[in-house]
Image (cartoon, rainbow, N blue to C red; front, side):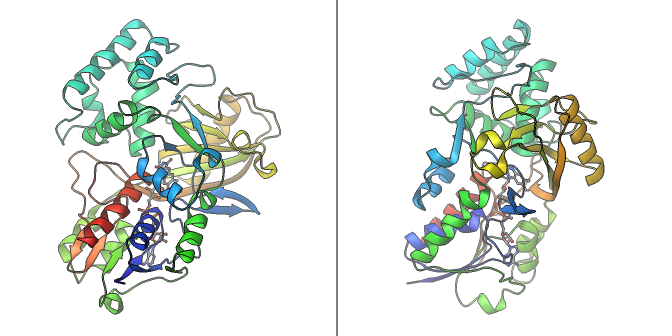
Length: 410
Ligand SMILES: Cc1cc2nc3c(=O)[nH]c(=O)nc-3n(C[C@H](O)[C@H](O)[C@H](O)COP(=O)(O)OP(=O)(O)OC[C@H]3O[C@@H](n4cnc5c(N)ncnc54)[C@H](O)[C@@H]3O)c2cc1C
């Protein structure tokens, strides 16, 4: 059996470890933290299992869904499948019916509440143009430039929320070509690809706990609390770096300065999740609602965790997500709690905790050159930041882990 050391046990490292074990490698996975999962991990607050940040998956995450299946997760019981809906509590905005693509989009656009016919036509015209161009555009275009023909309402209620949740950047700064890839795979692919998949369990239960057990049962060695500060002792065997860009940059400074420099140059944007609790019964149409977000009301989405799970501990728990967040924790928390009161009409909400992940995702800007998976002889890298079609997402991480093992096998 060929040995393989994987450094980092986030979703990329876990995907790589599972794929490598299946391919017959003797895997040793070293994770610095006490638990697996990386940025998509369980965080316990006063005995309550929450996440490092509320996550959603979509139906187009084929590699992620396959990984969950491989390690034995029954996705139909742990994920709440909901046709894409970006509607406010009042029902304004887009909601797609359960039809094959692109009929679902067409029907959703025609029935979007609060959109005039010029709004709807601007989207149909633009979408037809993108499709005719094969969902490709110049690398230097931003999402805002790409969408110049769209009405203000479509920008506010569709493009801006989609862009900030997929690329974690506002439309003026986000890569148009990566955004088009996301649109194509989510909205123009197979049935269900645009569906939102909302975890009904904490992120630890969704993958890391199950993958850990699977790896152990299949002979892989998994060591948590095992930080690697120097690659030297590990270089007698192939090494796969599955740690984030800034850590990979430090570890490769001497072995591959050019690669290291490129990884170190990536900039990052934050995501803040405010968790709150209410005793007020909620009667939202879905477990997630879009919020009318602006500078003083920064959260874009609210999740009713109690609706997602029968677990008594989650009843009344809300997760409010501020993508591309900036500013200090206290101010953000206050603004979001005001949104809970004024926009959601919840008057008794108490704060549970606020989690600010400063380097949540790399900034997926127009024309960005991302590091490749080959670092140097015998050293490979995987992770959501490695060159690929997707922005920093679970799917990008999993695909990158799989791709690194396929490359290593050759
Ligand atoms: C708040 C938040 C919300 C998000 N929401 C979504 C969402 O809704 N949908 C979506 O698809 N994506 C979302 N993402 C993005 C997604 O979580 C990431 O893209 C993905 O988890 C990245 O996985 P990774 O394995 O590439 O990196 P990481 O998760 O960063 O994993 C790297 C691992 O390496 C370990 N490590 C670091 N240094 C060392 C070292 N020296 N030695 C050993 N181990 C080391 C770390 O502890 C970590 O476990 C979100 C991210 C955040 C932070």
